[in-house]
Amino acid sequence: MNPYLGKNHIGYQGSNLGNHVFFGINPTNNQPFETPFYQATSEEVNLALELAQMAFEKYRLISLKKRVLFLQAIAQKVRANKDELIHWFCAESGLPKNRAETELERSCFQFEYYAKAVESGYALEIKEDSADPERKPNPKPSLLKMNVPVGPVVVFGASNFPFAYSTLGGDVASALAAGCSVIVKGHAMHPHTSSISAQFIIDVAKEYEMPEGVFSHLLAEDFTVGQQLVQDSRVKAVGFTGSIGGGMALQKLINERKEPISLYAEMGSSNPIVITKSSLEKRPEEIAQQISGSVLLNAGQFCTSPGLLFVEETANFNLFKVSIIQSFSESDLQCMLHPGISKRYFERAKEHALLVNVLYEGKKEGNFIQPSLAETTASEFCSNPQIQEEIFGSYLTIVVCRDESELKKCLETLQGQLTTSLYTETSVEIEDLIPILSAKSGRIILNGVPTGVEVSFAQQHGGPFPSSLNSYFTSVGWDAIKRFQRPVAFQNFSQEFSSEKRLFNENTFFLHFLNGKYE
Figure 1 (cartoon, one colour):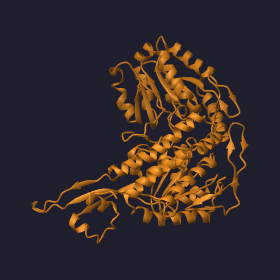
Figure 2 (cartoon, one colour):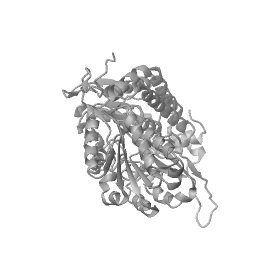
Figure 3 (cartoon, one colour):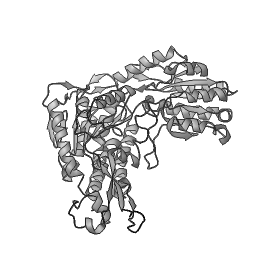
Figure 4 (cartoon, one colour):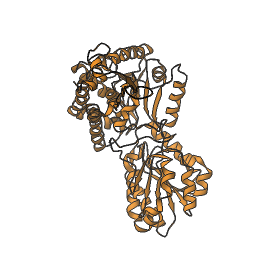
């Protein structure tokens, strides 16, 4: 057994100075696992912060080639130990093995993908403007602008992605790729998975002689550790994936700081889908099956799970509804991630039922659920903003619109979303909808469902508030690295001057670029 399991990972050391312990829970039977996990004390948090600050000053100057190899090696280490990780992923989340395997590979890919962004020079985002000393009336200086790391970063693990948005997630990978040291506050719902993941990252850091403190992992089941982390002056950025309430609580804490910093929070989204008349008339059952499959995926516990469906009623509308109800009623019950999450799901479903007409109430047993389907009118939707609030879990509400005017009015009342989707057979039907939806969401999908977020340099995973706190940035794809960087412009630094190394260490970004090398 891992000797550090249950302890906080502070730099290269395991630590359990406190008396506050908690246990992971098996959501399939609500029974605790046997290993006690020690919540980090204030002293341990401070030590992790101290090491992170010292490590950052060294790590930011390490050659880009070594940084690339470090990131790639993390992916290799994880793949070599996938059986242990997948075991605990499934045990602590109740999610199936195929989901665990897919998510683990996604995590590995992210470390390799962000390494490529560094290796290719994309992450530096270099912009060069040559000098013109003869320009009149004033000479033009040379300018070179590039991105540099901001400093130590805090990442909060997500409950619903024990790999891809937690200790092995994209926030960690992109922050390390940016040149920042990282402290992860592991999620209490999957402490085994996150702690073992942390140990593998630390093993690789040691092997590649990274400065101690480049990565730390702290345990906690309450808010005290997170509060201390985000309010410490040594922390320069925070990554968070979770609820609106959790994100806003962190923002409130950050607002109390003397020095403002950025919180990159991905929060709530109902991911609306619009079905136009042409598509509902032509393929009602096909679309119903696609949407049902998306809602059913892992009990709807995705940030991109669809929760709202807008339709203009046609002759095939009842056939469409019957097809969805059949899919839901015939589906197997699926386990929710944690008893705390299922409890909140049942509470939200009960509140929601008071505002809508429930067409099918899914079965439930313990933490296991079937999807539910509800229906409301456009006027009721516009009059009750609560209807559009996210229900975290497999719950779909159909909003029935009498005509295009009602449909547009509904879409205009939407809060910010991570995604919106459009089903149509002709572009004419959606010409007026695209401007509305582009103002409401970060990603628009044509004739498809929102689940499944491609890791790509062209991806945008983040949208207007309250889906995220900063719609300018994405938490997926190469541009995710920019969250943990800031631009610096160098004026009048010729290659000849910089090559004397009087002002710059030989491993800085600046000299890497000017000397044309990444080693």
